[in-house]
Amino acid sequence: MRAPWRLALALGLLPAAPALASPPSSITDTTPDPLLASLLQQALAQNPELTKVQALTEAERERIPQAKALPDPSLSLGLQNDGFKRLEIGRMENSYYQVALSQGLPWAGKRGLRGDVARLGAEALEAQSTRTRLSLEADVKRAYASLLLVRSQLRLLETQAVFLQQGEAIARTRYEVGQGAQADLLRAQLERTRLNQARFSLQSEERSALAALNRLRAEASDTPIPTQRSFEELGTPAPLHPLEVQSKAEETSPELRTAALGVSQAERSLDLAKLDRRPDFAMTAALMPRGGLDPMWGLGVSISLPVWSRQKQHRAVAEQEHRRRAQGADLEGQKLLLRQRIQERAAQMDAALETLSLYRSGLLVQSEASFRATLAQYEAGRAPFLSVLESLKGWVADQSGLLQTQAQALAIQIAQEELNPGPTPAIGATTLTAAPMAAGGGGAKSSGASRTGKAASGGDSGGSAMKTM
Image 1: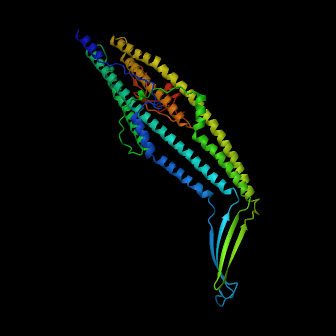
Image 2 (image 1 turned 180 degrees about the vertical axis):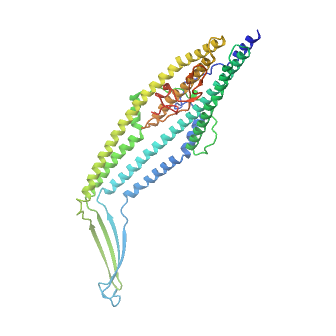
Image 3 (image 1 turned 120 degrees about the horizontal axis):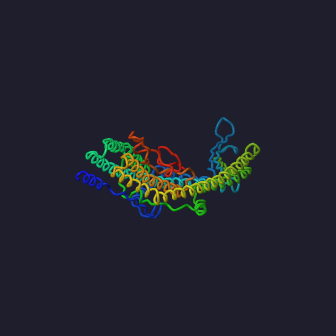
């Protein structure tokens, strides 16, 4: 009776299934996260790219008063003398010194239009600064989520290692009491060794995520970031409602604002080009001392003659008309792209949330039940140890797939809050997948790190944790 008691004791050492918490809060909700808030604050205060754009915006604002200012006056000094033999100032009426001051005067309205063009350019750059800030905040959230995801995957890997360790203990006990084969013991040892491959890959990704997050906040790449929350605690985003999202996005999108300001700037530039066909003026005042004789003075007005307007001013008007049409087309194109991205992300979010529901209500429950049943069958001698390993890896792969699908949903929500006009940047890590094993004890084709499953990525995407949308 000693052998069955040893086997039962080994089976009793198996750990309980890891809890898969899924609280309703999200990384983009108002749920307080002191660490994330601190990371965002540091990034906004220290990120060089944001500092650069903000400085360029301030520089552009300084151009507004310059554009509205009058041209610099000119001062001219001169001497007029009768003859070449001697200086005749004070002796001859037409000999004198001359001091003249000239001030250019643009046609009425030109200065105001130039100021408007400069002001709209500064506002456009300010919208670009808003884009940089939104993208920086989104990058910090993505990097933070990636770090939490990798660390959750590492914990899941360690859970798998515990199961394999206990499985090895069971296989050893069965082998010692003559109820199991030595191949089962060797297979358990082999799978535990293969877990190191996935562990090394995830540790490398953890360092990469840490370096990315530190770069965004202008810290040394190896500065540690101790996290208190788990990735599961970031929660599940809410579905996207395209009409509501589109209305808000069209009001706040930096790209739409930049394009709209470009249209206004092109219209002001066109008005200015039309005014440039009008002549400019210059006023000149001169004083001419004549030594002992009474001084002379003079006033004058000069006017520019646009005699080459067909080659210059008319061409400038045509140029600005083309630019205005181009800016209008750019605005419409940005609107269409924004609507497309909103529809895409709404569909992707629906698919991700349905997949999450499938994981939680079916796949995880079924895969755990399958593993427990297979383990019981192996205990009773009715299933090979290879089936236990396959069902264990399938269960772990489903838990990893749940994390990856949650990461996909978070990536979609962050990209939408960022109002990102491009494809959705991914949040991901190496997935722990269950690769098929060769029959007859030939060994697993893959033991841990492998490609992402379709449920997590929306397609057959290799290498990365999820497909970039």
